[in-house]
Amino acid sequence: MNTDLSTQIMQMNSNKLQNSVQIAVFKKAHEMQQDLVNTLIQVSQSAPPPGQGIRVDKTA
Image (cartoon, rainbow, N blue to C red; front, side, top):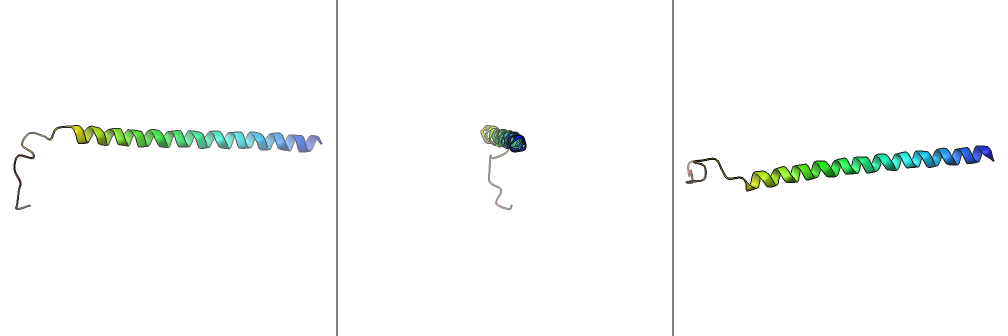
């Protein structure tokens, strides 16, 4: 009986740890995606450097 109970407790602790790790990884991935999106938004909203976009270079 004690063996079964201790095995169940160990299994529950293992599952708890695994879930915590999965949540932490998911949160970190989400943060990284948000950082990428924010960077892309900042770049797309910034004005082009002076002299760029004034005329079309047809030889390019």
